[in-house]
Length: 289
Image 1 (cartoon, one colour):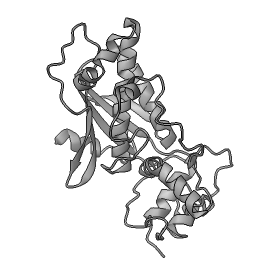
Image 2: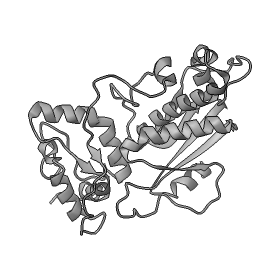
Image 3: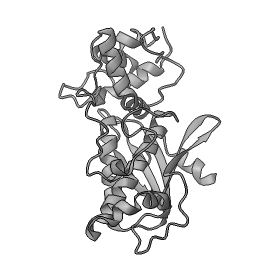
Image 4: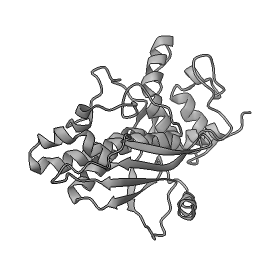
């Protein structure tokens, strides 16, 4: 509990202009894995979470550095995150990963059971060349980790029907060179990197956020002030969107549904630049006029 409170106290820094946010990802391994596993794990998490604008600063526990971050998560890896000479899976459980929840609130703490992931992939790993096994296992662990992180930063325990947030992974999906969920994914993405000049408004200001919200077409479903309509839920006020990191994760989590809804009701496809998220979050957190 003391350590948990210490790390929660780190989330106090101010966003820099043009950033979604500084996300500190603390990892703790029950048994130190090989460098190949760690690198594959980190590369896969970075790749899968990049569409949400989430870029991680990887840190290890225990940590005594003085750095701070706007958002953080702590992931604990139990068991042995490596391919073993023998099967050695007697301690495997039934969950690949989990996110901690208290009184209905998703906490920034997750776990991944490496023994269970390895047992799940055992036959597939055995069929690979020895030099590829650690990388493939690390990549699979990274995919399970990304799934849990999306729960944390979207602040919900619910799953989506597609994507890294789907409730069940197959062996093939965890071991594939590239994680492809179906052949009908959206060609458009709501979040984008903009080449437009930075807004002259103060970063993180409600005024700039209102402009970006309207310019991005969000009002077509959520109303001009985020008050909600029959096409989309209420977004404005109450501190529900507490940071641009949470806003980015929620957009990515619901992207497929939002794009389909926009097509169905024939409104403009929503589009937000990453550098606008701080402003939009500030606008949505403000009280309605």
